[in-house]
Image 1: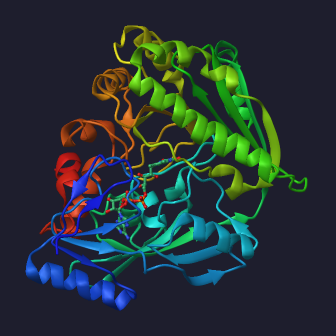
Image 2: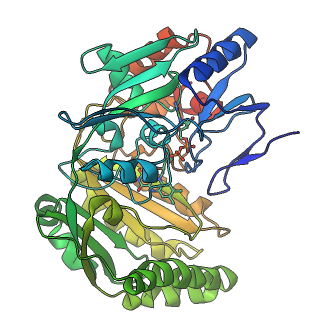
Length: 431
Ligand SMILES: Cc1cc2nc3c(=O)[nH]c(=O)nc-3n(C[C@H](O)[C@H](O)[C@H](O)COP(=O)(O)OP(=O)(O)OC[C@H]3O[C@@H](n4cnc5c(N)ncnc54)[C@H](O)[C@@H]3O)c2cc1C
């Protein structure tokens, strides 16, 4: 029977020749060794939340949904080692029980830990890096079936390459994560005039632990989120308020508005002009992992680029001008987040203080022209694409954007000379 695989956004469909479900490291090693012997490629699946074809394969697919859980806990050092198929939600819950947390997370928790780090998944916070910067060691199953351990102390270059590696350097079997004591975040989310936000952007980014905002294409206001660590006790949203804020407003009402815009494009812009008016402030305190992640049920496509922080104002001005030129309406706001510079070779935030700018379009609506124009704008600012989100760049352009790109391919040539870990997406971006 042929298996059909599809990613969350339904932008990619694949038909793997075999789907294998290892439960132990030994089984994982055996599968990789057999693939190499058979001369076929092998690709690990995360939870399919990348918009690009990064997890797709027509050869052997590794379903790691039964390869999950902790293998080691070092409480004094606040480090845990987990199997690569562990879902972030399960990881966060287990860390909480241990009195620990990850310092920063993205806005959903349905990805696997290996899938998330492999594409450079990030949250927001100018003093913090993405998930890959919280990895202090990892183990890669090589083509021979042997395990290659790497960390800042052992095989340093492989470590710097492997933390964001698109599955191209081997199958990650386990990851060791540096955690922090669990903490409460005071969340403050409110609509504000976009121009006012932009005037004080440097102050906002520097003075908040986690600052981000959503810019609405046709409105004048932005939804601003400030999350700061606090010693105060939790005071979560009541179940009713949570249901109204996140489920009714952000998912159901927003979904209904998007469906209306898709069915009647003529009303999309007028609706978009008032959409920010229905947003209301909300303030609450909750454990960090509950604040970072929210349910995202409105299906969409997305492109996101990392640009130097200093280029943000210019890029947003160009984007705002673009909306008046675009023939097709855009239903989703632009999301703007921040990150510290890091030292992970293929991290979009490598070596520079970064602003991430993400554009989206509702499922089933035209997005090609919009994303093409967006890409031209961010390319003008030396933007680097998120590896898991839609973009059109190939190896040559990417090699110019990443100072350590050639070092990455050098390591790849050593660990996978026969390209057992390639797929159509690595062919595009790595060659
Ligand atoms: C609704 C939504 C919200 C999102 N929010 C954010 C966000 O806030 N921030 C952000 O940065 N991104 C975000 N993303 C993007 C998402 O985090 C990334 O695309 C991430 O890679 C998806 O993880 P996954 O587990 O689904 O992995 P997949 O998409 O299934 O796979 C990603 C890559 O990891 C590889 N891989 C998986 N497991 C292994 C392994 N064991 N060893 C080696 N390689 C492996 C796969 O082969 C593939 O190359 C979002 C996506 C969606 C759909």
